[in-house]
Image 1 (cartoon, helix red, strand yellow):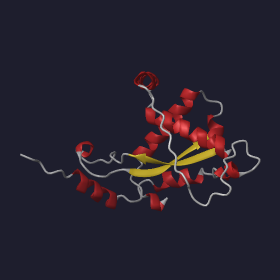
Image 2 (spheres, one colour):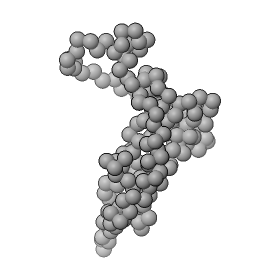
Image 3 (cartoon, one colour):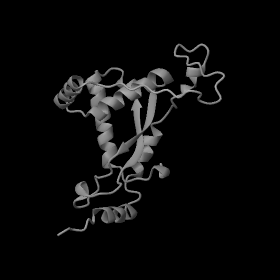
Image 4 (spheres, helix red, strand yellow):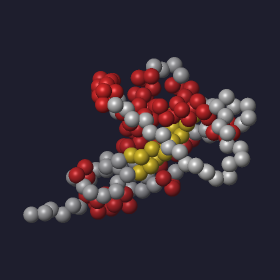
Length: 175
């Protein structure tokens, strides 16, 4: 006998009934943003990271590069993450935010981050089929991370992502 999945419908009802649960949290997050990461410097003649964009009206020849991390490296990274209590996702967020920080020369970076959206108080939501995901801003203050070890900085990002997940029932358009 096939049992009907009610979690998706129940989650939509929950979202409709609680549209403003975490407005204060997300308002405070937005108020933390004091600077935009400006990547226009990449096109500046004097930039040490200058990218030769001048003269381009469109992409003439699209290029792509793929970096494949071997099984041994993946296993080692997984072991380190497990030992330190962080996820590979947080490591990748740390790397990406630091790349933006370096090239954008800003003290903060803000990146839209996808969260699962399955933290709602709905029975069987983890086994339900449906789109629950949401994209929300992950804000990293690089001045705060300056005196932290790499592991501490990654753990800080992990904590921010966990906070985002626990408050993910907000519409991005309302932020």
